[in-house]
Length: 285
Ligand code: NDP
Image (cartoon, rainbow, N blue to C red; front, side, top):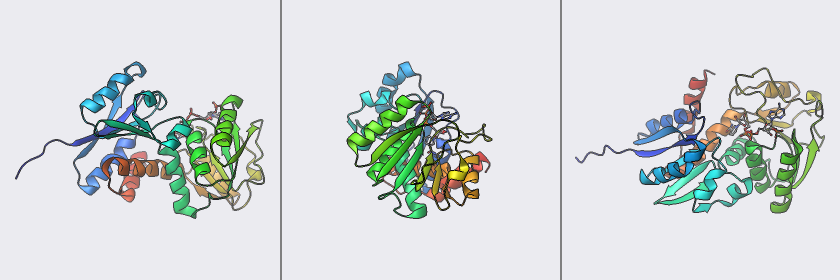
């Protein structure tokens, strides 16, 4: 029997990157399916990104994830960028198709898949209130808009970023967006059917923090989502649940964006339960 000692390689470029947990769920998925793939966590300094992309091609790596600070900069080295990633303005996944590099963004798609799995097609015609206008918020807003959201209220601490996202949505999608400034405890618009925290407030280790909103303004039955993967039951979600909200946590989004990336790279359906199990064990939750 011929032996093959050469695994297929994928991984992540970031700086810092040592605490990125994606390797845990990806390698769990490879083991579960019994395929000889490896996921490498690679620290790449900003000034080394061009060389790192060349290296990735030289090693014939099948793909790469990008995290802070490379998601925007990497776009200049790619042959092709998916339309939604272009609207979002960032790429978190590169697929190496025989030397041709294609950029994708799976963050918002992972979010939408979580929403769909839990509640069905609630995006179509929906009215959304989104807290934040950073990378995760842009990805979520664009994918919700492409999935049929009718109206979006973007709330962000810094006005310029919030207005830039509103401008993208209004110019490039059918979703009608407006900016709402964040002053004091924010009252959630009565019309909101879906409320998303896409800020970094509440992320481990700051688990006692929650976005500054008037929690009593969350109506019973509102779908409330958090992007924070750790802890999954954030203070934001616990407060919303106490007001009768139906909730989605950020761990599901994290796993689903990985599930989508896994399929793009391997062509196989990812073993989602094995990936969730590995991450929950890793986070001790
Ligand atoms: P960015 O730095 O791009 O954006 C951070 C956002 O949080 C900005 O809108 C910022 O507002 C806002 N923010 C930060 N601190 C506060 C505060 N004290 N009060 C109000 N708003 C605040 O980060 P990302 O968008 O990349 O990441 C945001 C979060 O999403 C992180 O916690 C990350 O872990 C999570 N994430 C989860 C994913 C998942 O799969 N579950 C995937 C990607 C990210 P301002 O513009 O005013 O600074």
